[in-house]
Image (cartoon, rainbow, N blue to C red; front, side, top):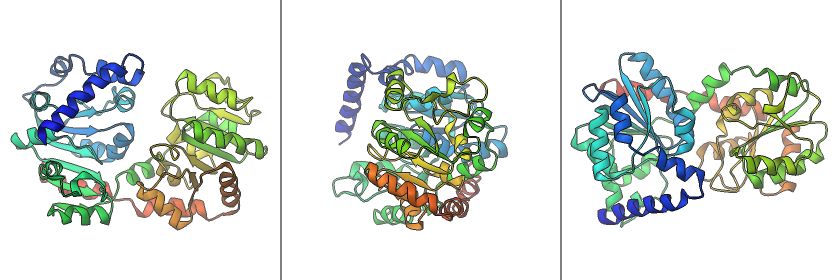
Length: 404
């Protein structure tokens, strides 16, 4: 099976090279890894120990950030190295001040893994949620580096739990300890004789709660909203935006903010053509509260914009899956999202509690919007859900102190 895994990594690299000819993300993926060992050696002293955090992308970074920043606060002399797999994480956080260095993770080959581990000399390694790389895990094991998975989540359909998944189960054996989000994950790991696991919850709750307590004030957004009721649509994709355009036409007494997941020129132009009169955030000058719809055309503001809204729509539910519902819930917003949410425990919980509604059409969106306008308890339920789920970071830190 290892030969097949290696072949898959090689094939993936070839496909990336082809895709880079026309796909900007693939181009960044390859460019960021060019001459990477030289880049690392210029930033990192291999004779010093480091704490290595790896994240798939930006969402996982925000998920693991409470652990990272609390470790840094508790052990200020420790040096941290961060890696990302995806450009969408690296390009936004490459200048993160809390780390000695931020890099792309080289593709998972035996040579790359061995070289990388030697270059950064990790004291411990912390991976977030669901990144599993055979050669990196085995290299850490050979060098006796403790490896931890935080905010892990497992599902029955994963290869680890298939009768033919022995190779993938071997990867899990290299992990010293699993901190998982739900009871199902504990049961699944126990079913394959992995006992070094505890139910710690999701560190995102700590992160979003902290953000909601001291959000960044955005005067331009506050001026736009004024005293109006505000509906915010975060991390949207084109199918989400089609539905929201209908909702805007139906509700002239509300203001709307749209923060798309992708802010490339072509996508922004699509939204502008779809919604006549929409204002672009970067084009606003001073106070402008006369417009009805605002388009957020930059990255990094969404988690603070939620403080100005009354109802939130979370995008992605018509594609691979919904984006972060907890950022909105932490501000006491009831949330609406598309039909693909089954992989997200918090989405299922919020629906069960009556603080979220899943929709699959413009008619369903209108009905959900109408219901939540008249439900004066849903927002408080959402905020309380976040509050009672806090504490994962503290539990993880308590365990890690024996390894640092």
